[in-house]
Image 1 (tube, rainbow over the protein chains, first blue to last red):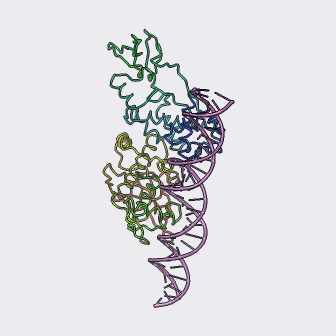
Image 2 (image 1 turned 45 degrees about the vertical axis):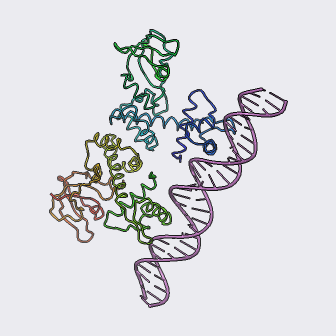
Image 3 (image 1 turned 180 degrees about the vertical axis):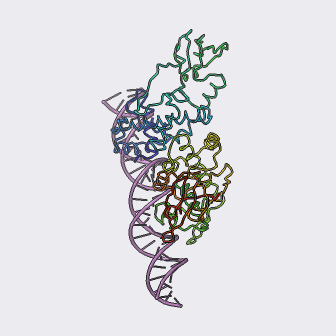
Length: 218
Length: 218
DNA sequence: AATAATTTTTAGATAAGTCTAAAAATTATT
DNA sequence: AATAATTTTTAGACTTATCTAAAAATTATT
């Protein structure tokens, strides 16, 4: 059996490993998990013994296939629950994360397959992140950061990088949601802020915002 | 903060205390929790320090108001989730318990109040047990055991005492569900088995079955 | 290449929850 | 009312996951 703590470590390693980093460092995990490096070393040894990660002293860890399977399943559960909370229980997209963090650890194959069907097999969660299917396959969409879009591009919002409450509330306030169409009008050389047009309205967006919003160029 | 283990002990004490027993014994809790009496003593001391139970050595425990509140909230969550599983995710009534045991520990007030609304404020779970409302009030219905019904009584099934998979499957097999109407035709003096009539069909039911099925005499 | 800075690991301690075995208290039996 | 049986508690040990502080290894800097 796998414990809740083990699941959380595996999930953290998965998320850190996604960005091209193959040997996830002890310190990175400690930061992500808000714990101490020494605790991470202990846990990493345990995960290694159980076959969830490959680990060599001082070299960081990489998920094994077995570990990756578990991570993807947790991500799948997390994202399906997020869809449920937004679609069925009227949560807003900045409220779902904490609750989904709890729900993702519920163990029942039937629960998840039925939930998936009940939600009509959604492919993306409320933040635009893809939901792995039953087999663990993840559909990648060719999204770019709004900060990388070119002047004149017509775009459609497809996801967020940061899903903190503050960022999502900012988007809500400015009528930016997934599916919103916008045009990149101007980039200010000095601070890389950009002017975008949503419907008729113009809006100036800081580089930091543009760096956390994914779009698809149409 | 209250731990998962503490919640489970409080729930067990609540269920044991319901049947008129005021000072729930260490051994009874140990049996219910499938653990050892010594573990119970340790935990009961902790629950007492935290103000969830009144406890005097060798005298058993009673839930305080604070403890009862927690217990009722867990019961509410458990039963709401059971309704969700049956009504929305097509679980059968013998499959819901295990999963609800996990879901009942999810902490989010909004989740439960929204789930309650989504399910249209159900008053009973799939086994006929009442669902406490937001304030912890529990509506009692005047149900009796089928074994206590008199010959000639017209009854309607309103609940089960035992909700083990075996018992519920037996009921399914014999077309007995909540809401099913039946008439008590005959009681066999020797073994207290009774003959009931459901629609046109007659069925002989052992005393053990009749002792676990709640009915309302109409 | 030697030293400094950083990262990682080890060693030992702590808290939660459990266990076994033995002691103490309660309840039942003669 | 004394003894037997049962229940409950205590004492000490174990596991999981955490921590601090110090040691070891790696990486960066001069």
